Amino acid sequence: MHRAFYVDDEPLVLETFMKKPLFLENGFFNVGHSYDPFEAIKIIADTQPDVVFTDLKMPMCNGVEMMNKLRQSGYNGEFVIISAYREFEEARLFFKMDGFDYLVKPVSDSELLVLLEKLTNKLYSKKMEVKQIKKTPSPELNDIIEFLHKNMKDKHTLESVCTEFMFKPNYVCKLFSRYLSTTFTTYCTSIKMEEAAILLRTTQKSVKEISYICGYQDYFYFCRVFREIHSCTPSAFREGGA
Image 1 (cartoon, rainbow, N blue to C red):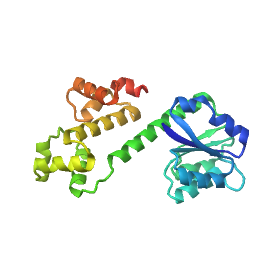
Image 2 (image 1 turned 90 degrees about the vertical axis):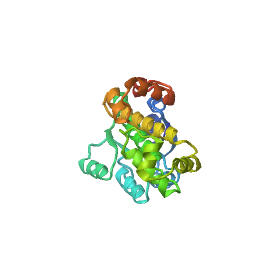
Image 3 (image 1 turned 60 degrees about the vertical axis):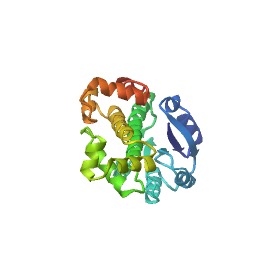
Image 4 (image 1 turned 120 degrees about the horizontal axis):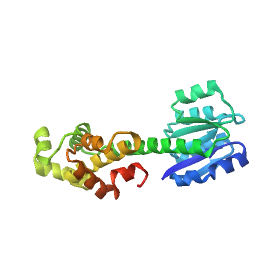
């Protein structure tokens, strides 16, 4: 599920938009809304939603200005501008500040569905990336983790990694157990399956291509492992089955 916040100075317009069934159907749940952009800035800074849907033209502070203030405060979520105007200059500034998309009112369900699907892929990719690069208190383990991620295609074993870093197997096993509460083998499988999930949701690569990218020469074995981890086949996962 993705956390969404809504901003528009017109209450009726906002209520109608944020209650569209497509949001919940696509995994976006409402964590708040505001009719006042200045109030919205404070709430968004506190709650850190995954995405902000905001009107462009609002009194005292438009959507792009609000986004700029939040970016300066360190907010790193996604922004979708929704406007009744095709304002080129505002749109240019919006995308320059890494805005996600710009929709023109009235927004049809088909347009919203396309946007939500793209947004889901972007948010999923961001969350997986954050999960993958999380550091541990152990510099040695961090080096091993970085090595495993950078060499995803290779088939790693405990012995090969110990040779690479000149560590004893027992020491490496203790690092994974102490700091990640898992085993070396389980960790290797998990990062490969996470990468596979990202590629399935964010690219058009075939399942066989993704299998190879993630270090599995045996396509059928890859599919079996993926199903054990994600409770569905790679194809079903791509179609939104998980």
